[in-house]
Image 1 (cartoon, one colour):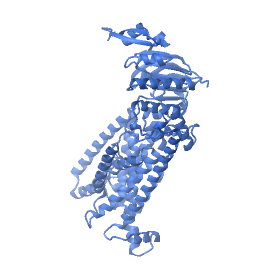
Image 2: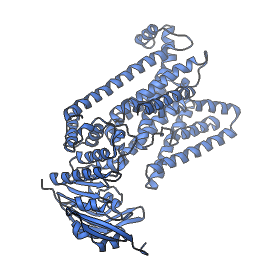
Image 3: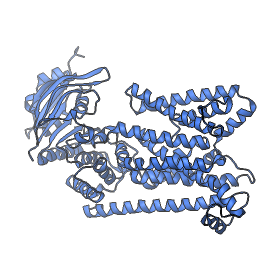
Image 4: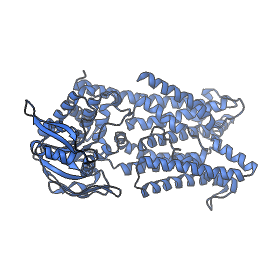
Length: 348
Length: 266
């Protein structure tokens, strides 16, 4: 039997252990990030990578160009997209009370694909957007519009979480059908481009895009952090959370808005990399539980780590060829996921 | 603690267009007393409880605590006065008991726990008071049924409300845990001077632990008073549609013995 004093010190130790785990994940991420920069057609030694990084951009020399202009944008993008999607997935799973939810469950990625398809195949997009940005801008606009449409439908019905999910699934099918329709009428060249887009690739990373995604993350993260307690309470059920004083509807709306921004921007820039938003939160949950003060950062870190490692693997699987990261993530993520689930089965 | 009484008047609770409770009023529920809502399935007990707790949108009428109307309050403000405990805890949640209690205290700021350390200390005091401090570091899915109810109760009591509303706290519990949970609920209500309202299925349990029974059917109050006043063969025939006897056991507690369903009533 645990006495009150033992419970208090046990709780402190638990919090400490979780902080240590977060620190370990951060270290792992730094290592994976450096490895990602070092990996490529020319394998760079770690010292060279660090040297080039520390020398700053435009220091001159071939190493500096490789590191700063070729490798670094990919590596940073992998990290940011992983963090954004996994954080979105974590919030999504909590507010929808559904462990299978991910940023793409409610049609965000299908909508983005539709937007991208319109831009690629028909050249239609938002007016006054430069040609280079047409595809991502369109994808993002559609992703966001889908989220608002969903919330509008749900509110119309005064609906609960289950209805929200059902509407989301309906949207997924509707968008997928429209994308298929566009594919059907597309030229062979446009079709190829569209298929490649939907596989997800970091090859589209540029510093401009990185700056935008980083800015969205910087805006979203403080709101997530502030919502952490309310999200934890929501895990105990809608009525109970309200009885703790949580405005659950406002909490859910806020989370869904963050999710659509983060996943919309991510999908717009790198295409659909679906799995990380599902696996990241599950890995985090198994490590630190669901106290959202730890769960949210751990999810973001797991997602970033998974995508960094996938990026490394994508360069190694077929020498001389960069396999699209969407494919690699699923190929790496699935065994990791299965191992985690089996491991949990043993523990319980 | 001289907490004010809770008065319900003209309450209308509906899910969408389906009106479950219409124009229901209850004489004041006094602090330090436990009131049991009883009635057959679909009588509207849980709906009434959720309506009073402000959990059903569009609820009309008044739920006054002293001079103030709980239904007109914002969610965080209401949570300072009233705690509601739904049936059962959700499954598959990777949280320890302590984390849920600290979460309950910090979900929205409360004067009880201005910072993390005081929240943890307060959480442990609540667990100790209910005699479950030893469960503090257990995760929710490793608790037995009775322990889960006690942890749920601890969460409801953590914010030190003056009204607690419990929906079937003894459902799915064995006899020993039914009695121990209800004894603890009663003791807490008496000691802290709370207005306690509990939905119960088991009439004998309600009669044994509650000060007052309110019998509902079809969303309306059919009887209201002490257990001895309320539980009569006539009421059981009207509300539950059974031929029943109400007798006293060797220790003086009320027992309800249902003999047969009344034919044609259903």
